[in-house]
Image 1 (cartoon, one colour):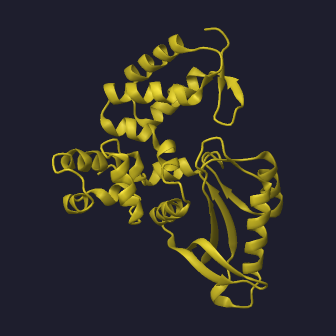
Image 2: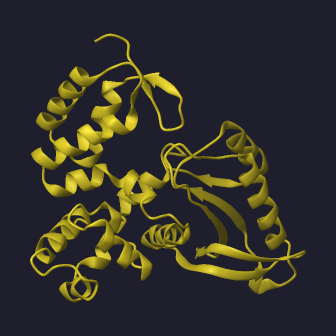
Length: 274
C-alpha cells in the first residue's frame, strides 16, 4: 500500500503500521481471521492524515460485530481509562487497585509530614518492607503528555518525605504514574535523578497496560454493556473495577435495568477471566 501518514491525538504524524494495529488486536484476543479482516478493511479506508481515533473506531465496531464482547472491551481499555475522568480521583483508585493486584498494600489520599512541608499523597503503597509514595497524574485526552515539570515536582516532594524525621511519614521512593506518555526530557531527568516513572507503555515491558493485563484489573468503563450514565453512577461511589460489578444486587442498586444485568455480569466475568 502507499505510504500514508496517520495523525495521532497530540497532532504528531507517523506512517501507518499495519503490523502495529494487528499486534494491538492480537493483545485484545482477536482471532487471526478477525485481525486480517480488520486490517484489510482499514487499508481500504486509509487517507492521508487519518486520525488514530478514526482507526480505533473502525476496529472497535468490527470487533463488536465479529468477536465475543470481552475482546472489544479489552481493545478499548486505553479509552476506558480516559473515561475514568474528568477528575483524577477515580484514576487514583484505579492505580491503587492495580498495585493491590500485584501484591502491594495501598491507601489513597494519605496526609504525610515532610521535613519541610506537609503533603497529601495520592497513593501510598507498601510491599516487602518498601514504602512508596505515588503521584497519579491523570490526563483526560490521549494527546496529553506528562512533562519534566511534573517530574521535578514529584521528585522534590518525595525527597522531602524521604528525609523527614517523622518515621510514620517517611517513604523510601517516589513514583510518578500517568495514563498517557512522558516527554523525552521527563524520562531523561527521571533516569538521572532516580525517580520511577510508569506510563501507559513505559517502561516498555512494565507499563500501565502490561500491569492491567497481567492482573486482569480492568476499569468498569471497559464494559460495553453499561451505559455512560450507569458507569458514572458507579464511579461516583468509588467503584472502579469491572470485577466489582459482578453481583446482581449491586447493579440493581445503581439503576441497571433487570433485563441488562445478566449480560453485564457475563461480560465482566469473561473480561476478568473468571
